Amino acid sequence: MTYADIWRLLGQLHDADDVVDGQVVQVVDGGLLVDVHGVRAILPLSRITGIWKYGHDDMVVQRALDEMLGTTIRVKLVEVSPPRANSKGRLVLDQKAAQAD
Image 1 (cartoon, rainbow, N blue to C red):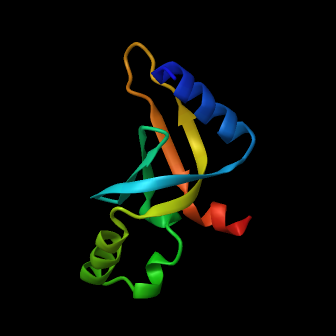
Image 2 (image 1 turned 90 degrees about the vertical axis):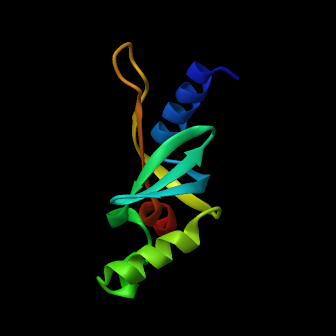
């Protein structure tokens, strides 16, 4: 499957409002990077299920995010913008929406 084929598949999954699995690969400012079909996607902190149950203590939230590293999570694709000549592409995820289904 080519890189273009993967982006086409991601677009189809988004259009179908499907829930997909992704692997958490990195903690970044404001959320997590998640690998979905070989594409790195952003999962914003505000769209992570239950993250605020830890309160708003940065250290506690950071520890909770670190514990998610390497895990597989269920997410929905909320923004799929394939790469263009002058951009890398953008894939945004939502874990809360996936669990609402």
